[in-house]
Image (cartoon, rainbow, N blue to C red):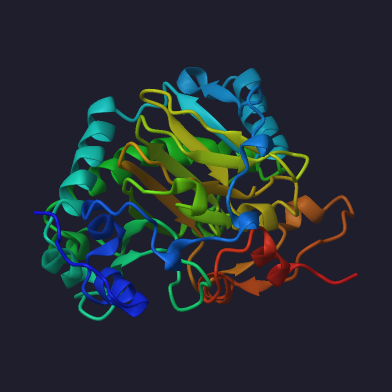
Length: 359
């Protein structure tokens, strides 16, 4: 049932959305005609239509023959030039993708009091977190998104503590994506002159994994706000499932314009994260991206973030520097890097400065 609350004071909006657990979904279901002021972004944080390159697109790669030299080269080229690409024929069954999309809608369709059980204050585990926006305490303006974040510790913990509405489908999505993740990393790392992914490098590349369920409800004034602000991911790789609505934009190579990533039925969007940019000494690009709000449809997406372990030190791989190439990045504890990312509002590519060596 849609909430019937009205707001006489701006602080009531934050209380309703954040403290009472209704999220922006609750706001949207009230049928608001005007965007609450807390969500109005500055013009530099929204996308101007004149900055969208309508005829540009990120590469689409057929993974059915992933180990062929031509396909491997196209993967590495896309990671270097674009930082983003879409994959088809990737071996993750379409019924698994459909299942996790349905589970996402099912979770966000729960009553606010049920979802709030997984809020920061009430969640049974730090690995399970229901929230809204990105970092409400640090943001000048809130983002038009609710999310459920699931950090994978073990099958046992997931079965016991993840929400019953979605846990089985998320676990299956993660399991079935594992082969794709392994293949992509094998190709990308081989190009960096790493002949073998031993146990140490495996942990460094994919020692931890987190899956988010994202919900972007209908917005009364989408041109005034943003679903997710400008940022790059802190992951090694991100595997993104998006629905048919669209709204993901990637920064063009010129650093000024934007490229839409159109939904393709059955595809997955792959992007390089900051960790891989650092490990490759900048050869692979972690690119700024954002998600716009929209007025006509509720949108969902389900990213899998493939990360180093929190205890890992990230820096350029020795194989990358073996030919005398100068390191661009210093050694950084990955948990420190992630904390730096989450303690501030989204701010484009500035997070990577935390690991950049000064000249």
